[in-house]
Length: 413
Image 1 (cartoon, rainbow, N blue to C red):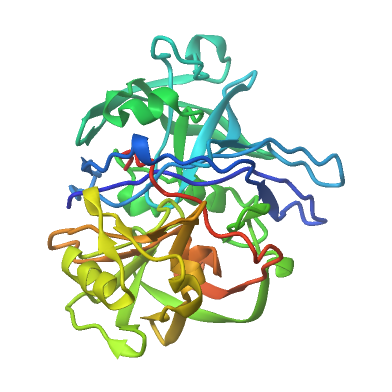
Image 2 (cartoon, rainbow, N blue to C red):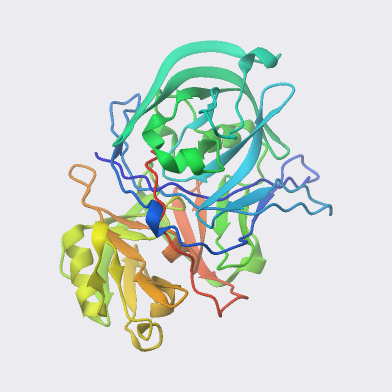
């Protein structure tokens, strides 16, 4: 399956101690500035092979962040914002801990960190020679992207996420990041921490979250995202935060334990049912927009009054934010509505449709990817223990600001 990972995610871990030794860990996410990234855009293809022989190619994206530390009862890991295009957080690897910034991405399932810094960059790197808990693995790690390879080798060491520690965890040291192109060169993130299922781990073994679940450190085997709309957001490991959602959760069972994949029923545009044969969707924190089969997206764009631009983007009249029609997606037994204010991205008076076409071939496609455009409106719990998503309407405090641009894309598995 061809992957278009449009990298990006958020993240940082907050540790809260409980009487039984298990806890809920929160990661604050906050945006700082809004900068157009249209000039840096590139959409490519990425592909890798898992131990099971699968090729887990999936969309993802890149975004940005700001630093925050709250010296209250709970310990926050810093969340940074670079040009409103990459959200990343800090973890540490080895003993003593070597700090690296990673993107937390539900569209992949490996942790990799660089051990070599590209020239003229300020990326933080990991050196196993400086760690007393390092153990050699040496197996080759390689992901092939449309613009080139990202490769290195596997190693084992302690990985710390907030107050959580994965002992002797198998991760990848990367010495070739050429497949990420210029987005990595100018980006502020160093590596990627995947939150997908064990089945798509390149090289086999446990995914980072699978290892956390097995370690017994979490109160519940789940994590939840609240994505801020130019306001602070949050990733919770081990539970949920009731302050960030309202009403009841809709339970949506998974159809595959890979990329958090669920059954997709009908899609409607202004009450009109969209014809098509796509029956599956992924709710993906690592994708900034909505992405679906090219033909379906073309139909939707026409129905909402959008006009095509270059590279699969669509322009739309900003007046449609107030006068446009609603989109609905049926996931399992739940129907989720996106209003024009949700799917139209207002960039200082220039409006874009928060959607683009991506054809993912069989057997893994066709597929819809419901990224941050969807998740900004809906608080999403990735319920590992019950193999389901739980989705509720997010509580909004900042309703006068439209979502940020989604133009910088980097291919990451």
